Amino acid sequence: MKKMLSRILKLSGTYRPQIITAFVCSVLEAILAKMPIAYSFFILGKFYDNSMEVKDSIDIGIAMVLTILLQILLHHISDRLQSGAGYLLFADKRLELGDHLRKLPMGYFTEGNIGKISSVLATDLLYVEEHIMMKLAKIMTYLFSSIIMILFLIFFSRPLGLIALVTSVIAYITATKMNLVSSEEADIRQNQSQGLTEAVLTFVEGIAVIKSYNLLGEKSKELSENFRKSRDKNITFEERIAPWMLLLNSIYAIGIGGIFGSSVWLYSSGRLSLPYLLGILLFVFELFNPLKALFEESASLNIMNSCLDRMEEILSEQELHDEQETGFIYDNQKPEAVRFDRVEFSYGDKKILKQISFTMKQNSMTAIIGPSGSGKSTIANLLARLWDVNAGAIYIQGKDIREISLENLMNHISMVFQRVYLFEDTIYNNILMGKAGATREEVYEAAKKARCYDFIIKLPDGFETKVGEGGTTLSGGEKQRISIARSILKDTPIVILDEATASVDSDNERYIQEAINELVKGKTLLVIAHRLHTIKNADQILVVENGEITERGVHEELMEQGKTYFSFHNKLSGRKRGYLN
Ligand SMILES: Nc1ncnc2c1ncn2[C@@H]1O[C@H](COP(=O)(O)OP(=O)(O)OP(=O)(O)O)[C@@H](O)[C@H]1O
Image (cartoon, rainbow, N blue to C red; front, side, top):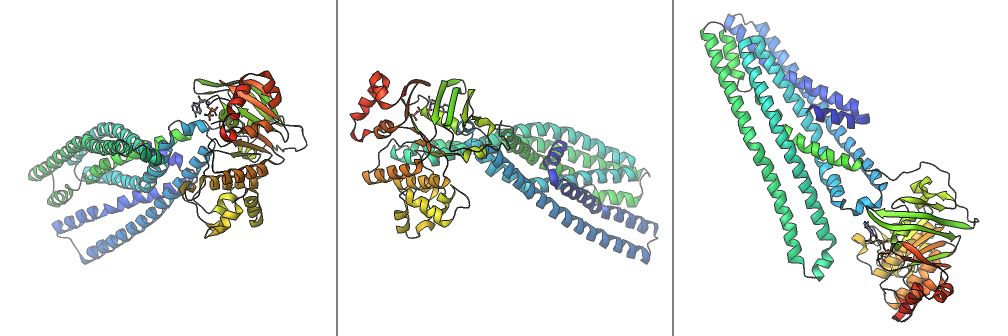
């Protein structure tokens, strides 16, 4: 609990004064809640001495009312401060995580971490933000209530106080051992919850393939297996804690029995007066309740601890180095646009690119071709800094891209992928994402250039039509053109294009080609080329094999060499409509 408290205070940042004030209010409230016990002893004493007067009863009445009112006020203040601070604190943490994720290399997202990110953002943080402040305040209240009760008892009778103290210490030692089990189980439980999120995501993402290959039964079984595992882990969690709770309850029962018996014995031997005996008998059953509640709550603290561990694990992932301000300005007049200089790259231990060097002249088209898996997309991804090179460097007009801020770099590069992703928003907003603050006319103009204006205005809601998750309500070709409109609006000097391998119907193909022609007008273009027409028109063709550039030049030169490009070309020319795949 101490660990959790200091962890929260460390996380709390600007909300620290608010959180500390809330905790102080909780402690004061706990003290006030136990005041009626003191008043009861006072009244019992007065009755016993036969010295009770009207004034005493008025005083006690006023004190009682004031105590309760103050307690209500403190409860209200701590409640408001705590819940407010909890939600604000974790809203900030979510934003911090979002910002951090933005700066992580793409590798992090492709290495099976999607389930972890989803479960931390959606499940773990939700659990922590909803419970943490309330639980901590409750725990503080229980802790201080226990201390106050034991101090009362020591004050009234040392031997009885000693029994309560020893019982509490034994309970504490037992609870510490229970804590070890519960924190171990909490980690297992949260990891399974991550596994479950991953399984659900995989199932939903792959549902089209699952259905078309008749795998529904098999994959549903896998999903059900994960649900079953989660259920079992939750049950195991409770089952492993239950014996410890039983032991703790037995310790309290023995303690209560000891105090009960000893107080009667002390009274009969004349060492305890009747009002004290009555008072102690009245509240002895309440004595360990706060302590009991305290240890019960610590199980949920362990779950929260495990959630925060997982959040911090993500936050500790190494970000791509991001320059803050470089003042880099792209010059359209300079002859050179991009230069790869002896670039090397590996995914983990797997070496992918070796000594890649080439230059892209301003407003030229460079086509990369090569067999599947040779490293073409990796070259394009490195230029956009989805990963960082392991050796060598990539320059834009002589400036190492690692010295340009990520934001500034992305202001200079557009990427058109084969797999188009549209956000669940209106078509208008999907295009607008290319340039925040663009005027309506600019958006329409981009749509016209991307040959999608005509079909958009024919839709019932025109540009305000919402596209479904991932743009499922539109055809592949239409989505492709909307994504090109987004890039046209972005209007960057460098364009990376992963040319479609699958052919669409001839109308769509013509429109897409016209849209691309508009997009790349006056730009420096790096294209992962699959169409003969594109390759032949390139200012420079790079043949990539096994992560190395094995041939380079223009079409005629490479044909003359009669090597890999030559056979590629012949293979392509033999195909209908000149597609590579
Ligand atoms: N995120 C990744 N993690 C690990 N290995 C990867 C990752 N992405 C690609 N690879 C591997 O790197 C190699 C090069 O991949 P890359 O996508 O660059 O090839 P490509 O030439 O573009 O292939 P294709 O034409 O099939 O798209 C392949 O062996 C691929 O399996």
